[in-house]
Length: 339
Image 1 (cartoon, rainbow, N blue to C red):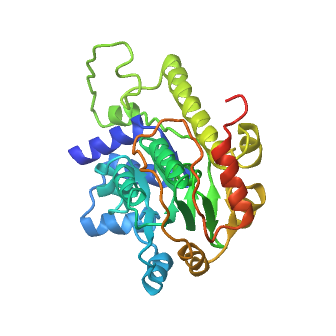
Image 2: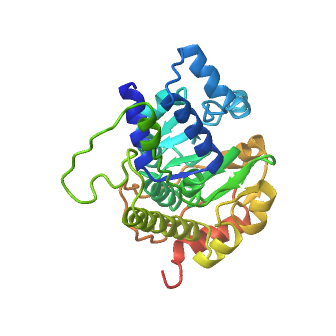
């Protein structure tokens, strides 16, 4: 087995993911075939990825063409949060045909736009099934902090699932095209026990460790009761952070989020608007025209690693409807009761 695939197995087996469950299942299906010893050429692997729908949204056919046909004015920064989100790209990028996005790199780009005095609004085009938890809370925080000084509109054209929705939930407003899907609030971690399969082919790995928990998530052995409990504790903690950030961003209580759209399922754009997960259903062209009406305002610099304190920052938000303005004002003025 190649080092690339060994690395990929390690990443999948030992990371917490905020990703749409179907995408996770398809990713594991490709790994399972490789683990069985099926060797594929580059062309065959690419065909398998496409058949398995593992391209991970490497491009937005509609969004890309629309952006090119309707360029944004200079005071509007258009960004793309497209593909499976990874803290830093590596083995997953190679496996998925290059369709991932580095959350860390996106944070750097957003930070630069946030501190550019010539930029009045940031318009983020979103189409992502979610991805790795690492750096997602930091991206959420950066979007929320930026939205206190500038208009940050996130436009969903396709999917905003799990980590992708977590990240954008603190935006000034979230807009979705009519056919888009939003949600999948939850955390998933899949442990692949390959010990029996390796035994059948005569391979018996020896794992040597120092520290009683060092290899508790090893794919070469079943999970122990303690390992399952420890892993579930981590998953539950991340889920609470996820729901809490969404609740703050959407000006709801954690109980409201869990009851209305926080159980892990996906919603249509209309359903998402109905429960307050997004602000409106609209087209890209219309959204760009609204956002373009904003103009640069004087604002303080945005810190890339901000604290959880969220004081209100007055800013002109041209193009926002009354509901969005009220929600943003409430977002700046309060925290979750009892949080």
